[in-house]
Amino acid sequence: MAEQKVLAANGNTMVAEAYRQAEPDVVAAYPITPQTAIVEQFDKYVAEGLVHTEFVPVESEHSSMSACIGASTTGARVATATASQGLALMYEELHIAAGMRCPIVMANANRAISAPINIHGDHSDVMGARDAGWIIFFAETAQEAYDNTLVSFRVAEDKDVQLPVMTTMDGFITSHAMERCELMDDATVADFLGTRTAREPMVGGDHPVSQGMFASVGGAYFNLKQGESLAIDSVKPTIQRIGEEWAKICGRPFSLVDAFECEDADYIIVILGSSAGNARAVARELREQGVKAGVLRLKLYRPFPAAEVREGLKNAKAIAIMDRSDSFGAQYAPLGEDVRCALYPMDGHIPTRDYIYGLGGADVTLDLMRQVYSELQELAAGKLDQGKHYLGTNKAQ
Amino acid sequence: MKDVRDFESWDYTQIPLGGVSIEAGNSDDYETGGWRSIRPVWDKDNCTNCMLCWVSCPDSSILVKDQEMTGIDYQHCKGCGICAEECRFEALKMIPENEAEAE
Image 1 (cartoon, helix red, strand yellow):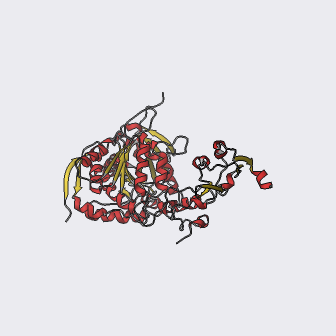
Image 2 (tube, chains in turn orange, green; image 1 turned 180 degrees about the vertical axis):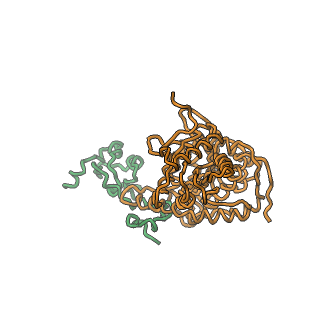
Image 3 (cartoon, rainbow over the protein chains, first blue to last red; image 1 turned 90 degrees about the vertical axis):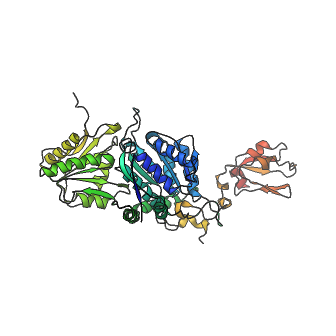
């Protein structure tokens, strides 16, 4: 029977514990706030001999992802962690990791992107990497960051997937805030994860191969990219299956989207990450007053769970899509565009308002959530416009 | 096993995962000689087999047998001209490709 230890821990600690239990063959990493504590703590485990991981302290994130790709092609289990400017510096390697189908697991402590410089939590960094071909999870809590990380190793290395996975949590709010967490015993996790079986190890096999090939002439590049696209499009059932397997072991539920009171809700907030808690708190408060409020939180962001989003929103009278990042010059912020796109095939039109909130770690208060639900009621009554709004900034004078 | 030389006709289900080349060391099959606009021409009488060209060639296109130069691999020579530049004995000179083809 699986035994779980209850402890007070933050998201960084829980990810470091997950890495200790997954015991990657290689971790190549560079420190950056707010994820530094993950690799710092993991490196301590290496130094203490608790894991047999080759820890590569590189000189930049460009190098850390390069080293991870190289290690992954040999058939190794590989993990790293980053945030913000570090993730941005990895940009070219992110595409290479996905194109070469390297099942790397990477934690990201979501943080703002400069300028101006800001170390606090928002989703600007992840959203810049959303088209790179990685599977992307958003955790709401430290516990979920742990669960998502363990599930991610299985998903990434599954023979039908073989894609890199980014397991994200909100910088500081989740990475640094202490919560009550449950840590599974090491043996149970080891059983759940198993070891990676590489498809075509570049070294050590009987049949040597070349990887990272040139495919510039003709249509080989084009055809290969089609395969990569279909691969990530088809991973949802595998994620669901592995997530449910873990849920059965740990006793915590797993779903691609977390639909809170959405079934009969008139007014629904769609959101990612740590702010969902405040949205739910206000939704509960409104339910007591007879207002049917709901919250749809996406745990999986790439591939985008469009069918699950449609299912969660189908009965709504008005929808607020809340983005903790902006897509400058685009019609809507990233989640706004994704959700609107998912709603397009539905019969009938549900009025939708897009809110950009909490950039650079700006507070996301209960009052702001109350304002959103109040505006949704006005929107449904035809008294407000749809469109994109900054939530909680100072009023222009 | 699939023949890697047919890769241009493969669809996405046939390309090995991640674009892995299932056969190592096949770059010899990729003929890069077509990139050439000038070509080295070898004068056997002037050649002393000093091997400076062989050392300098970035495409391993100086053909050698039993420590003696036997010719140039025009299937892979890209016409960079380094061999002719390095040659101390006027045994290699570069001529335009269209002249060579006319001959």
